Image (cartoon, rainbow, N blue to C red; front, side):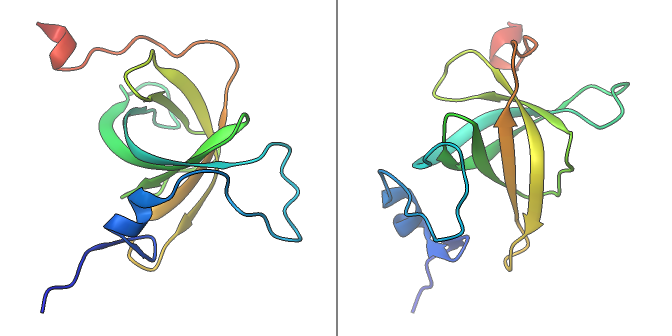
Length: 129
């Protein structure tokens, strides 16, 4: 008997099959509605001390609104940390971590808000040829 891997309490198939508007609860005070946005994004994660170059990795996106995006990541991130995200092959956009909590499976659910202005251009292996 094989067990399907899980992403944040859902099977991989369940996680990636969700679409549309996220349901809200009675205490939800968000400014903008959230939509399921399941996929993989390229990320450049900046350290809190700006002297080191950003870490280049891939993150799983969970949901999206006009104000921000929710991500799943293997390492904890901290409020104020900047991430440059490349979503759907579009130019990088800057987000700022506003919350991060550890999930039961050891991954982290990271809430980010979009920052005004443009992200810094980043060089990837594909673009360094």
